[in-house]
Image 1 (tube, rainbow, N blue to C red):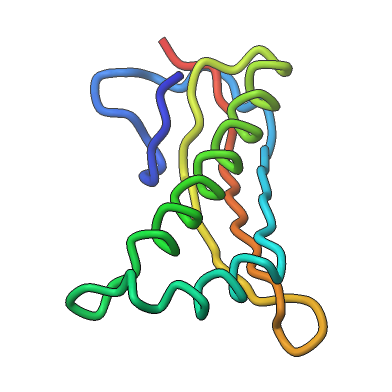
Image 2: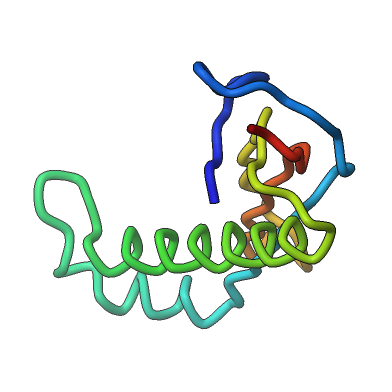
Length: 106
């Protein structure tokens, strides 16, 4: 499925708007505990383990959004927005959410 942060897809015409689609993934408190326990993994100010968890959460959110778009017959998602929010007591969890407009494009 084509996905874009822009509101159009070059060379393709939007024939029909199928609605807003979303996807979410939440990283629990364990990732933060693991992150601090694995501080030795940090190289050059970056944590490979933490980045890997964020990438996995983002992938889950995108897959959920794509599944919802497919269920309404869309062939593309445009205007995608990606957000990261801390939630829970004392910001103990991180939520990755994505949203966009499912369209039928030709």
